[in-house]
Length: 322
Ligand SMILES: [Zn+2]
Image (cartoon, rainbow, N blue to C red; front, side):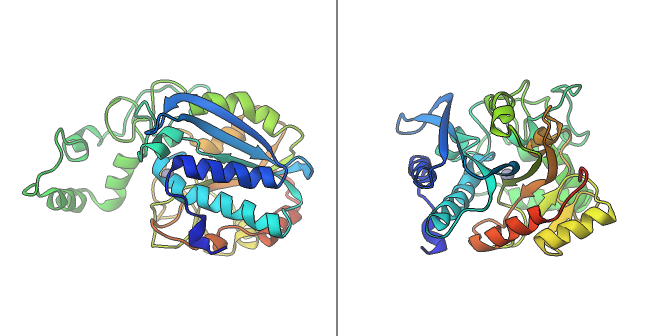
């Protein structure tokens, strides 16, 4: 199978293909409706598939589509792995694949969900409230959230370049992408309460990860970095030990932590990876992160392979990485 053939043309095709590939491996399948419909009137679901025969103590969680549009890539990667494992052999660890975490965004070609929530800003932990915005966000409102579509004569690029030049790219990026909870109709809105996807994770993670003691969670994204280049983004600072271990697992320079000077941005509160970490589970999050890939990239095989999964679990981590 060529890598590009793993890409599906729409939500319905991708979902069917994912489910067929997982069923072909004998994995257990679940479908969780989110209460919304797609362009063809189809019911939209988050789909979970997991292997049942492998060692349940070690779990690989591969999730995708939290930002709807990015699911073309995430779904392709998951499906390519499943189809490849059908003709070779799946890894010797339990695998949990979460497909279409934002099915509305995927089906309707949106980043956000049906409530304009940027889901990767929605996984707040106990004690955090759905309030607040970066101090600079209101000042960027007109640029980020124009009331009308830009016309041909609208110098949007010029305005954006001028704003970035005045503020500096890191400050601009942080103000825009960190997430905000005060403007429900604007970009990067993190929601006013837990989304359906968040509720689903809370309801199901306990049973999905039951028996798990070592969990690696990779949440797939696109849109950052050069075309075709993968990077593991880790939103916690790394010690030297952790850095060395991750370099053994993922190859040096294939990951970046939030204490790096050129880290993309840090979200205001928690993102999906933190949910696994802080969820009241016996499992230890061995390593987690978001895996963004330059938009339109297609090097599926560099993201993950069985050898690397085995290498990751072969290292006996004694404690929590984060
Ligand atoms: Zn994303």
